[in-house]
Amino acid sequence: MTIHMPLAGPATSRTTSPTIPVSEFKSRCLAMLKELGPEGLIVTRRGEPVAMVVPYPVGPASLIGGMRDELEIRGDILSTGIRWESDAEP
Image 1 (cartoon, helix red, strand yellow):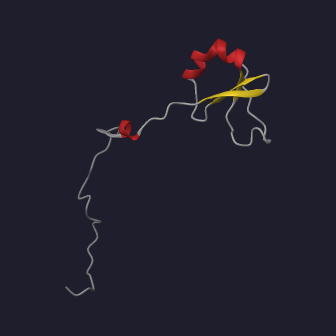
Image 2 (cartoon, helix red, strand yellow):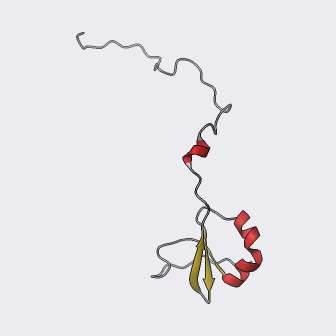
Image 3 (cartoon, helix red, strand yellow):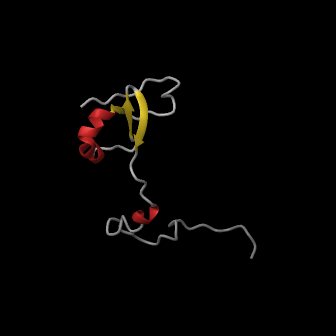
């Protein structure tokens, strides 16, 4: 498998995504999709970018309840545990 990291330059300065020739992507696309990183992948034809494959965004709704049964609350979460006196008059 040949994946190239683009060099800095006018055509590639906007992205740091790895690139792969279209012929190689065609033969390995299912495996590549399983390994796809958050930066995505640029598919090239004759060295010119023709497509960018990026992961589908995960909405915040899937994060709700994601830590259920992972955290334990100990003590009073509304108190700092430090006693102090206020100088303000009621």
